[in-house]
Image (cartoon, rainbow, N blue to C red; front, side):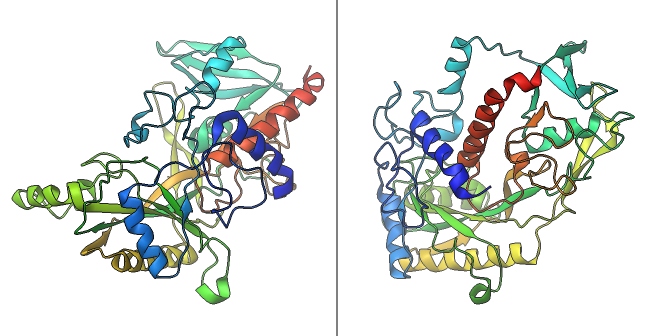
Length: 410
């Protein structure tokens, strides 16, 4: 699947849910329709860090976000109060609760809460999914029949369900003739660089995801860099004392009276940005079922994931660059948090060859025509950007494919 195959769906999604950004300033952006809303505001913290990027010869642009900069789609503009991660109470953030849930309910969709799917049921004599087995919160087992089954349970539960759906016809798990279900689990290598400035940063303003973007290290140049991976910076994330991206969490070695002194300074003078590094796909990074079981008798999953040499070289280069940017910006003290994993992808990857992949580019499993996978499980590579926009675009493409071929699933 080429970018041109997917571009129409990116364009449609950004109109449907509303994206804010500046396509011209975002010099790394591939061809596409302009964003439907102007960029969100850049505050003091963003301007301070941008000064550092400029001084070391790196470019920045407004960070494109699925957050209203102006009223859009019947929802108000962002308040820039920095609480996106807690759930936007005014619905300026275009999450499914704000955009798709009202549409789905109006169209007749029924959400069945506290229902825990454990298996996809199949016909023993032919390659057809019949429905799913699930459990109510009470522990009572149920069966839901279906013309088609779409497993969209994220990158951990999707392969777990497929592997648990093994039968005599599919002894290694459903849609797993290639042996790839559970393989190629990926996650972005990430850390936050922090700095303390003499100026007040007003870091409580803005959005959790950030204010600015730098993708000058996104295009691949392994000869010059010594590693394959792409990376990006999400700049000037809104900060709180603790919780996600919290200031206090970034300095676990400080405690007691020293922590109080540090926080009194950092609350007004701290700034941050988030590094996102690509994780190259490796078959040994995988999810498998274990002997232990949960309360529904569903085997527990174990995920083994390690970053490789290129992944770590990219991350280390990013931390070095991040410190240089903050020092150039005038930070009096600079540090970064420990390396962690952000976003989960893979486990049921798409591909054109049934011997090396689980589904085709529409998420339709190679072995069972009326069984689809949706979500980041399909990703055969991780890139170095937050995956949500691509998840939406790929899912829209799949939805239109299913509608077009609906009579085939009778």
